[in-house]
Amino acid sequence: MLIHHPFQSEILFDPHRQLPVMAGNLESRGGTLRNLTRVSLTRLDKVLYPAAGITKQDVLMYYIRVAPFLLPFLYNRPVTMHRFPDGVGGEGFFEKDAPAGTPDYVEIFNHWSETAEREVHFVLCNNLDSLIWIANLASLEIHSTLSTTSAYNSPDLLLFDIDPEPPLTFDDVIEVAHVVKDHLKTRGIRPFVKTSGKKGVHIVVPLVAGYTFSEVRDFVHGIGKDVARDTRRVVSEFPRSRDKGTIFIDYLQNAHGKTMVAPYSLRATPGATVSTPVHWEELHKGIRPEDFNIKTVLSRDEEPWREIFDKRQKIR
Amino acid sequence: MRNHGGKFLTNGRKSVDTLRENKKKGITGSGKKPVPVKKPEIKKVKEVHIPLDREETKAASGRPFWSGSITIGLVNVPVRLHTMVRDRSFSFRLLHREDGQPLKYDRVCTRDGRVVPWKDTVKGYEIRKGEFLVFEPDELKAIMPESDRKIRIDRFVYYLSLDPMYFDSSYILVPDRSEEAYGLLVAAMQDLGRAAAGTITLRTKEYPVVVHVYDGALVLTTLHHADEVTQPHASFLIPPITVPKEKELILAKRIITDLTGDFSINDYPDRYHEAILDLINKKLAGEKIVYQESHPEEAKELMQALQETIATLARK
Image (cartoon, rainbow over all chains, first blue to last red; front, side, top):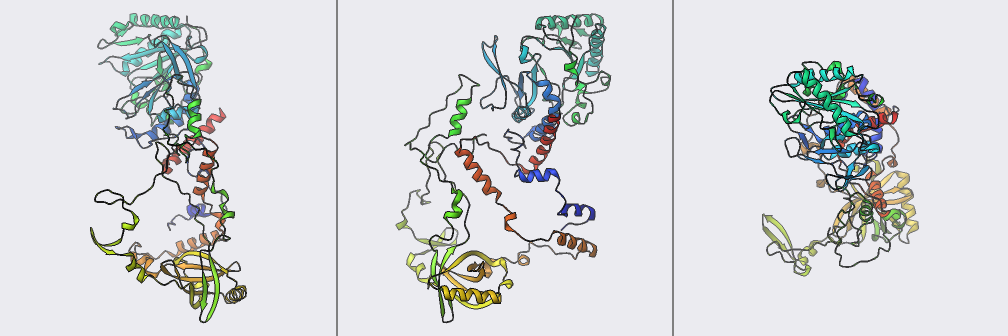
């Protein structure tokens, strides 16, 4: 019997004291997760990020903890799963369609796809169990559309996808991001920003209802052209997007059926980075995309995108 | 990983939940149809007997397990032996997954793989790897202890002096038209607080036994032989025990004293038994059984995360 600390042992053994809530609940549930989630969790100890030693259990833990921030964003937004059954380094694949065996609690959005010429059954991540189910499929990355099912052909988010071509770095991206922000501000638009989790940033503007994708695309393209004109090394046209030492302001993602990696989604990078919403003030030289990862994001007190859907704006 | 609990009812019919599940899947309209299962014969399930109320049906009222008499010197008290301890464990039959038919075991010759009928078998005692001493049934029968249908009592002992370590299984002794002698024995032993010690031969083995008064009846308990029980210190499993410090001992004793109470076996329900019963009933009712991998430690962490997230989401 290990009794060294009188105080502690008294608490442990006091028969009149109620056991901590967790222990009591565990007991009554027979030590299973069944009463908390309908998802059958599998292969929890499978390593999904070999370099960081992160297991599927860690990934599940992350998504469960980040759910209060992620779920409101994903609501009614068809998701594309980027699955890595063998972990980062193994082969990954995108899944737009609900796979066979999709459980009943996962809501499905059926939509006729002109490009695929068939009905696509999109997965919606509208509840916690759906998110857990997605994570359990080793879908490290969760991508979502820029419109919701209530008006699938009309975007409610506008996206600037800004990526550097080497030798330019994240520092250069930050500089350009601020220029884009300033351009928007002069037009009275308040943009939101997040790291992509890879090399770039995503600047997002929540929109009032009614825009078409081509309107939004043209607007983003226009800003890109303005910025490219004034700023060295910035390119606004796709053919030049892969030129060495440039930064491309990608407007082409603003299209029907295209997706953006969701805020708080993990990325399939060695360090398990997270596409993280940040305040504009946080976005300064010296910060690194790797600073925002599976281990650090949850301890951030910031919730920079909290009001994003309360700040829907017009573009002009 | 779903639906592990068994795809078939015992007669090889496709289980209700599999059928329901396929029917419900409106997700992929042109999806795969359930593959019809070959089955040699289709019987209707008449009634599946669940051993729910075996308690009543299989109580001690059944057939005696043994009958003979308690022999004390020249006195004989005829008794019948009834099972007291009921094995409640569920036994599952092993089935062929493809057609749901029960499998059977065969005695197969390790040399040519052929099935050997019972009449062509003898017993062998392995003296060295692959070398056997062969015994014909008659040879073994000759040394079997004679079952003389007697519980031979050779002394009376204080019941409380018996070490429960040696207790094996217990049987209820029922008077066999010997109510008077039986009653006398019960009363005398009870008054003196004694138990009777002796031997019984059950089937082919002789056991040490004790007979004691329990709830106004005689109960016989077979005992393990001395050499069947390993003494803790003889096993070298116990490291040298250190003498505890005075203060620690006082504290330990206080904790023990505080926790001291009456023992009630009902405080320790058989959770596994209940869980299996629950599973069987659910399956009978056509409910979907979800396979849940058990990861006690991980589950704890995940459960905590889940509980917290569920609480947060509920507040939102």
